[in-house]
Image (tube, rainbow, N blue to C red):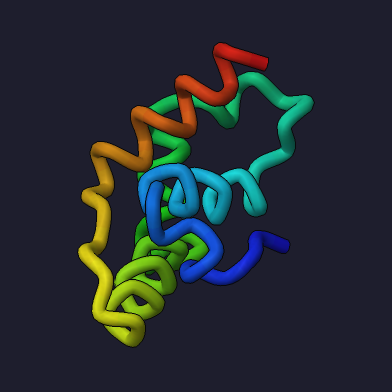
Amino acid sequence: MTDGVLEYKDDLVYWGALCVLDHIDTEDSSQFTEKYIKKILSIEGAGVYDFIRQSCEENALETPSESEIIKRVIELYNYS
């Protein structure tokens, strides 16, 4: 499980990406599409973006956008 938001307050987009990666099978490349990541972020999927937003708000931190998080997840996958 990803560490708390305060551990990553200097790079909240990275923390958001790690939250998403907690819900992805990193061995399955089909899960690293924008469509699949959006589903994980959505309430209909795992609701990860709601968790990210609430965590940031509770700690008076700016919430990264979904598009920033999606981009970082894909970058992290491509980097690995």
